[in-house]
Image (tube, rainbow, N blue to C red):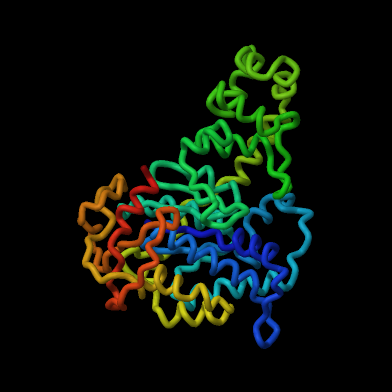
Length: 372
């Protein structure tokens, strides 16, 4: 299983939630947001048992979206220097640990997440996306889950499936972009269709299936839309500017899912276990002394019983990922295995050191349970 992390989202969140610590390096560099990201990363590794990790960051110097649509994110205040330095520093720290880091030219972390979700099934894997933003909801499907980080940290955050999204918002994942485009996104300076909020957008999509169907119905007698939201709102939706707002938002919100992330889930950057020395150095440098043993266990496999296991992925092109022991064509890396996630409880029992590449034994079962 591939864990795809929204680096910008989580660094921003930690920047604000951990600001009170004021953690800095000896030379004065701010470190608190990076410290928060590392803490969340090891908690996610413990809960999800990934086989590989990729972290995406926005390009800090250019934006193809803002170039094409100048209003996109217009009006946002400039990032504080202490945040900018930690966004850059987080990418450097993660690379030093051996985690795959992708900063796509002119694009954003969301595009990395979308490309990871599209890539994983091509090698018989699945993806969990870790983010605090809602944009990734559109990526949920049979191969992809979203760990939505909320207050309370990783363990308190929901792992969203298509069914859970329907309960939360009343829509299916494939309807999410229409939902967001109709509702709008004030944080990105993208006004929605006038008169349409989240509940109305969900009602329209539940009744007609898609925004395209809504506007197609309105091009005729509009009977279905009127039945769903009433005559007054139907008349407003029938105005040309309503469709124009939806179409513009859809264009801006579309994620690029065709990036070459340079991933090889059998070996290379991001594949667990990471180098124990590098992991230990990164966590201790950010005063995470008490977290270092957990980081070594769940990122470097330095504290688990030595047991040989087969790889958790099948070569099934549909990406169902049954633990058949088959490996993707050309796979030469070690097996991915694991630990019970935090919610399954811990025995507290300590084990002897294991050989460098021997993984813990139950990753396959944990990974599959995420997609039940």
